[in-house]
Length: 303
Picture (cartoon, rainbow, N blue to C red):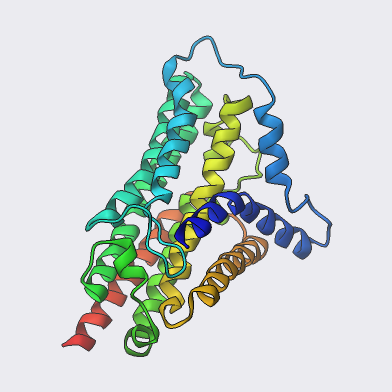
């Protein structure tokens, strides 16, 4: 049933950063943090108190909660395996991505509210990357609309089967690669950002959340893990023809696909260094070009 996959996704979301870190540790030849480290961190933070700057206002206090609420609401629009999402209507694919963006905007306002020039720098870079990445996301949405003729996540992603790959496999592969680049950027992963860095001039997302502590930081940690899970799920539903399998097999393929993509992210972060800031817009331009090429190939094929 859909609610089993839904609650399993909410429960397993913090496992994805653990898989990524374990993969990176394996490639570095070290043991690395525990697989369940994100769970331990969230529980520990929930037990602590919250400390806020005296220069901040209610904006900083509400930002983590708004970010978590927006991400949880976005999860309601995501289909799981062959089951439709709990909330579904025409146009929800746009609402889904804008809810994820709303969580980021809340953190940006919270960072600006601290009055810190350092956090303001991180917020500025985060906003710039989000704006550049938006064109890629809309390119992917445009391709899905052309392919399925639907504007709903449930009716478009679940409806893909082997026929889609046999007819438009090249376009699907290009779109998947472009969206994978957007996934790395939207979730502050290498090569666009480094969630483990402590260098002042290179920090982006981590610079925005330095003033958050206790339960506030726990909300941010869980929201970021859930956002990563949702965007990985989008790729899994895009590339795997789950409709052609039974519900049990599709569920196993769905969760297995999420964990495989998590390992791939860890491999990418292990073999690629973080890009310079001036090179990142060029990468976004290349990913956008892939989506446009995929759309043109599909249109020519249809004609």
